[in-house]
Image (tube, rainbow, N blue to C red; front, top):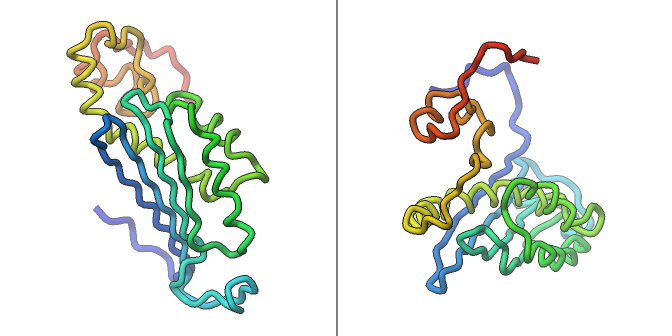
Length: 193
């Protein structure tokens, strides 16, 4: 179903975020993300020869995280192909600060801290959210199969995903059906704020 008919408007900006996950031969996984910003008009820019042309990337930046099945970062690489300032390109090594971190609850705060406010790039840091989601989606079936075959790896505590959205609320029919041990009956005492 499409969105409702919008008010009269003028096209001003496009941001495309693409993330892809790959299983490697060495039992690791590569998760790649790319962000591209364009505008439908030309505008002045001193660092790019006087202007950035219509539909030419203002930002074109990529990150590759190499992770294991438990979502621990083993390697990290970033590239800035296009940015509004030449100086932006010198921040790519900061992504190496992610090595050793694990994509898990707290990832957003830890990754933002590792990327540093004025030591890194806002756009590369923003890309880490969709990359994390892509990592989880990429390895989920292999991780589930491994955990099902290895009782010691099986999660005994509630999943980090319970209560993360409406469908995965602890009192939802989805949780009741798929994870009955994590289901919590809604008593109606909860107040919606």
